Length: 309
Image 1: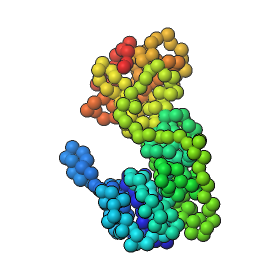
Image 2: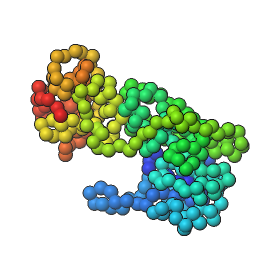
Image 3: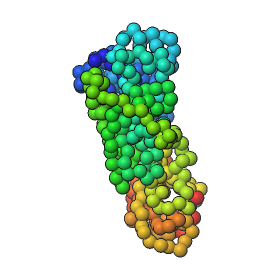
Image 4: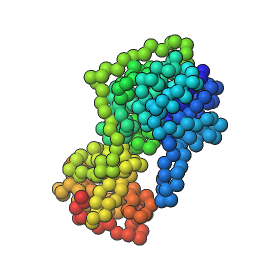
């Protein structure tokens, strides 16, 4: 099968690798332009570009994949299928209509729930117990095309967004191969989405992680898990922003104001929420590494009875 692959971040890499190992002919890999990163602002390749070059594949990085030059190039390669995984640009119909088997997207949710940019994070933040990956035909609307195959994945009590991301990117790669084979053999019947049941998972921002201690422990813990590692949950302690990466619910009723530090020991920081106590076990102060609270306490102090903001 002749394939054009479009993708950009780490999430797309296993799918590219899986298609290559499957023996399909990847004529072109399209990814976003290199961007400056880090303190030195050096231009770094996208994860997909890095993997494509390792595999000896041709890479194309247009500013807009929808310009005439890009469309002409894609058309000239006459692909059987275009696979799109977290590419970062919406495709025009001119491109969607080129491949004989269509443009197929791998999306990290059980559609029609969690359409949009951050389905993995919002599934955890909202306290879901199940999510998954869906392959679908790309259409004009956002993540609204007909569904092809799905794979369910459990969200465990301790699962954070980074762990779920890694699990779904590998499941998505396997599902895409099954989808390509099914489309080629015409054994898959596309299923329209119930648009009325759709939900939206918008992009994350840093402010989202600011903990509201007037919420229940479970909601706050879901926020901590769903924003780990980025943008990360945080609280303000003596006007210092402290990031939080791990917490445990302590079902103990304490007559204190929400946000108050009730106790501190080697197990962590005990903070009053609306209902119970949340034990914060891993933190990061500005300029320091992530560390367990007990390690931070070896050379530093966290005072009790402070009301966090």
